[in-house]
Every structure is written in structure tokens, then in C-alpha cells.
Length: 101
Image 1 (cartoon, one colour):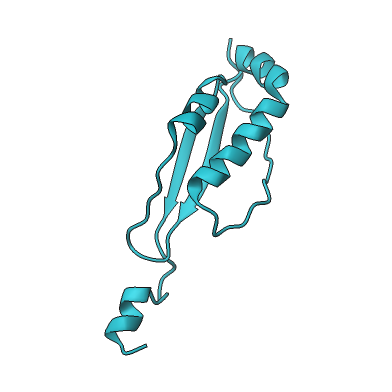
Image 2 (tube, rainbow, N blue to C red; image 1 turned 60 degrees about the vertical axis):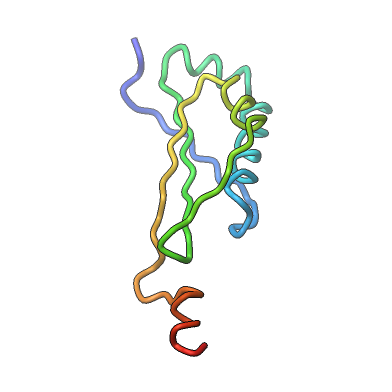
């Protein structure tokens, strides 16, 4: 029977401005480092990986390479991407151009 709730929080220190693919690569490296433990946990727990991604403009995105997706797929985990809009009141590059900035 799967456990109701457990949590392991691990912050990965990477430049916040780095592309999403770089953040995912760091997560995959951590999963690779703990592959045996993750596999054992997955027998009793659903293992979810969550990555937050924000953009300074209303639209943001990134391309994840086939290689990084394939590496992630080797682990018994689900991936959650939390997309965050720009902070309220933040000026975007487009706003600065329209305002003469």
C-alpha cells in the first residue's frame, strides 16, 4: 500500500537565471546520485519532483532536450512544473520600451 504522505525537500543551488533545462539536469544528477534510494522509495510511495519556473514577462518557456527527458524517464518519478507569472508591478522589457526606458 502506498504511503499517504512523506516529503523530502532538497534545494538545488543553481543560478536562478539558468535555463529550465539546466535546472532539470541538476535534478536528474541528484536522482542519479540517489537512484537506489529513489527506486526503493517508489515501491511504497509516489515520488514527485517539482520545479518552479518563473518569467519576467507574461510568456516564458524553454526547450527540454530529448537526452534530459530520457534521463529523467529512467527514474520512477513524476515531474511537476510550477509556472509563475511575473511579480505584480514588475516592469517587463516590453514595458520599458513602450515607456521610453
